[in-house]
Length: 341
Image 1: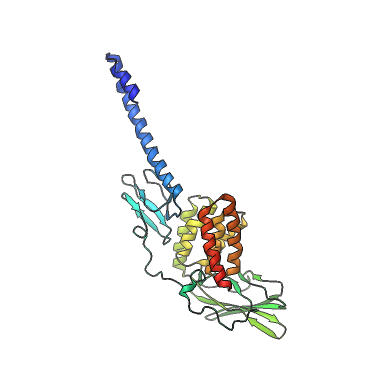
Image 2: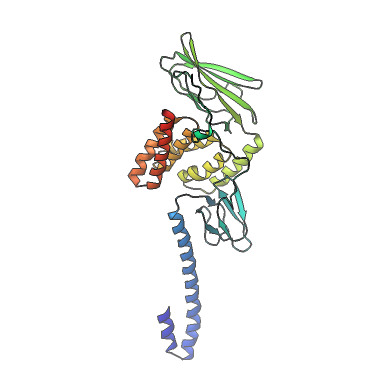
């Protein structure tokens, strides 16, 4: 630009002065565009270096960040004049609406809900007091799904681990004025919710039990007690999921970050695990998919399922040189060892 201006100054004819009047605005415009691109690239570079994303721009309206951009701690939201930028907070699974320039930080921008407390889970065993009974029968079946203590589904898949030499299994689902049971063959360890049975109801709590039958011996699994979220809460979550799906994000990315944040903000292990399992079934080669799935299995007190997925995550992370994921996998494997002692 300087060489062009210096060359122009050497000429003083009216024609060349007029030409300068046309060239200079073009140069300034080009400079402005390059500046904006530079700032956008700067933000992109920051995001590329980020080891932990904390949110996503979920609407248009930002001067530099298009809808779908992931955010790191300290990124700035710059709404255009009169615009509102919608951002999903991964910390609490909620959307925030920003009308002015804001540095995106947690927990400042994305506050932790007051009702969230540290729960006793397989991922946080230090918060538990004697979670397993000392005299627990080792040959008893272990219920696998539904996962966690809350769910959206009113007709969940029920699954359990096989018991050696079992001749059959009896599955029982019970609740307030609600009961059904069915017996399946010894080779069956997964039961789709029977179409002939009444579906679970919004806002109610149910107990799932599996009994392994071995002749005259009956081995009871430790029952799962799961609540189905009320209908209004389900509608709110469904609306958030719809908004994320409308962004047309890469499926792995949406499962790992956005849908995971929405489900886990309500402790919906069942939906979080099923979403990640769908990515595995689709053939994902992303180590984070397997590592996050392993974390959730561990949280659901299923260390064997966690171990299998940590091992896959480890292989994929080594293949791609993903040191951040390798470190997280090693942390998970230490917890698996703790559970399996």
